[in-house]
Picture (cartoon, rainbow, N blue to C red):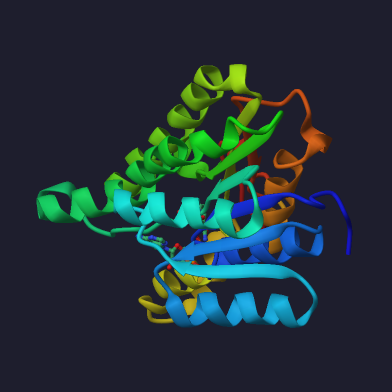
Length: 261
Ligand SMILES: NC(=O)c1ccc[n+]([C@@H]2O[C@H](COP(=O)([O-])OP(=O)(O)OC[C@H]3O[C@@H](n4cnc5c(N)ncnc54)[C@H](O)[C@@H]3O)[C@@H](O)[C@H]2O)c1
């Protein structure tokens, strides 16, 4: 247990699973009040209860980040429940696999609604609360696809480039209220999202081994690897850092070609 976030309240979208759940647990261990906003009710409640049993302060609220009213209510509730709000972490994300000519418009809109519009709603409705603080933080989860193309996931790739651009713009537009906004960009990370994709292949473990050969550290990232980067950007350890991205990918983007063998 640390105290880097003692007395702070964090609203974490997508906080019930994978990277978001690791952020929720780490933030609670660092003394934050954590507010989990997710569409996974059972997982979100179970996580909040287990943090409570361990002496932390956690609350779950069913929230679809693509719906403005959900986000507004959820953020207002977090601030009311814990007496203020200092940190917004946008982890919620979905992937749609397919080629553009096979997409329905609704596939595109759904993905952009969650991955991009959700961030817009979060800053819009967090702002009245963040303004009351001398300093505040927003961390948005991008991807290595914020920087490079990725086959068969065009909307996802576009959305993650947008997450990075949006993070930079938010950093500029709200620096005057003491908000620092940054983007964490994970590489291949072992989460339920990744497992869903691996499980669609004939031999999931072989597929993972093959994908990880492209990673200089020769392993998938763990959710905790990403959560520690989010923590760094959500506390005073990163004072002075805003409008930037922190890539946590085991070296993936550093190499034009790599075969870990
Ligand atoms: N796993 C990877 O390899 C990887 C790599 C790069 C970036 N990312 C990004 O990391 C973030 C977390 O993904 P993960 O890998 O932990 O996957 P995950 O599926 O375990 O977690 C995503 C979470 O977002 C939630 N969510 C989905 N739609 C939502 C909505 N409309 N409203 C609220 N919550 C919603 C899900 O319920 C889930 O809890 C995502 O933004 C993802 O794009 C993941």
